[in-house]
Image (cartoon, rainbow, N blue to C red; front, side, top):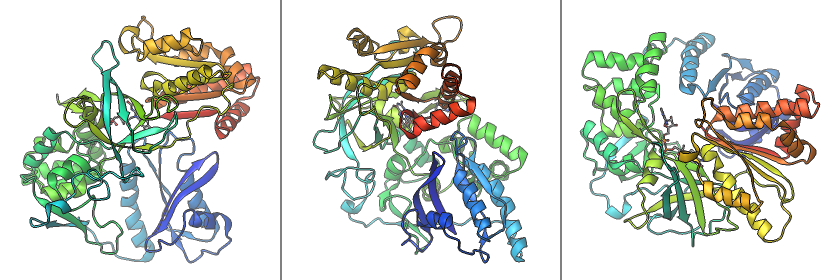
Length: 553
Ligand SMILES: Cc1cc2nc3c(=O)[nH]c(=O)nc-3n(C[C@H](O)[C@H](O)[C@H](O)COP(=O)(O)OP(=O)(O)OC[C@H]3O[C@@H](n4cnc5c(N)ncnc54)[C@H](O)[C@@H]3O)c2cc1C
């Protein structure tokens, strides 16, 4: 099996991983380069390719499509059709549907008799370790034991810095949602950042939900244990740092509140004592139309996480160690830094909206990281959070006189707050700074217009031009996209005539697509381009880093 990792940008592939099981000496990109450039005869190779992509990206699964075609060109025999997974829809479903057709076809091709029933096998075995020395037990470290107690730079994804929260204040003035302005102190960490970078944060799961899950699995959460890979050749010995306690695993290492994928339901079914419960779980993990529909309505639409499933399917009582094997690793959450290091070299500002919503079953689901942050009130006991900085490509132009347009509704304003601080700083130093135009949008001026006073100050000082859309302040909805459409002359003047930079940031991927489409129309009407030329123009802007998007969903 060959696993290739790559990203496809500007019509060119950019390999970042290329590894072959048991042949780990291959350097990054070697295999992809080899495929692209060599004329090797692969007529003895049997190939099949499944690509993992996301349809919101322009070059959706382009690498997989390319590799599949290239293997055929080099003489390989395609044993089974190319499969494409779309993470914007249900990537697991795409894979399982493909895989279920793939195995019979492969058996047929090689003349092998199929094995019939699928056997579920554990990848990790449980080792309980009551006698292990307490100082050998992981307590939430990402890699090095005691790295949280004994902090040593350099700080990165494997060795996060415990940054105290020195400010945590509410930005909304009304309404029922919450947006936090948070300031992290990174003094002494030697971490550096630039406006536009991201800060990543390892959250901790809520104690209440951890205890609930422990109870539902009849577990003693203080048990010290290790999960050990049964494949002794695998480089991944444990699914998370071990030995540890179940409590630590559930709090620090596992994504408890995510909506479980279908393969988890399949495994859970085996622990139902009630046949009807077993059947429901099995059906939801199947690829039958009824099963898919049930999974969609009962799991996805109802936003049921593992705790909710065990609460509602009462005869299902899996052992906690298997739950620890099944749940995905708790991922760090990224935030666009909302400050400039020119002004705040030792502080990182974050602007985060609290995720909290009522589900159709009447439960309140809470976002892991934002709820964790909400409870970190400066002055209280431990207000430190494990963080590291991730460099980004989202950058102000190196020449300050170049004009910029920034589109950042809601928390999309975050990186632009850093940009504006930086442009102000440059002006204060006497530099000539080009026009700085911000398109900001929110629901109501009186409720969620974040950083309103600060922004007004920049306008007064002549640093900022701001255009605002308050969608719910009048009968008809107005969004930033409407403002951009109206400002076609201004936009063309900045990006066309003055070679300015254009930035989009926000939590709505549709917004980014809409803005891009409007830009194409502006280039057509104001720049007298054909639609094809306008698209090419934007691509060129992207390649020159004059058009950048920092969008999440
Ligand atoms: C590069 C990047 C930059 C980012 N910058 C920022 C930023 O500056 N500010 C910011 O606030 N966020 C930002 N985010 C998002 C941030 O990383 C987190 O995803 C967000 O804070 C939620 O994390 P959480 O752990 O609180 O929620 P999670 O526990 O991860 O839960 C979030 C999930 O809950 C579900 N969900 C949320 N609301 C609902 C609903 N109403 N109904 C049903 N399901 C729902 C969705 O599936 C969502 O994915 C950024 C993300 C990226 C990738």
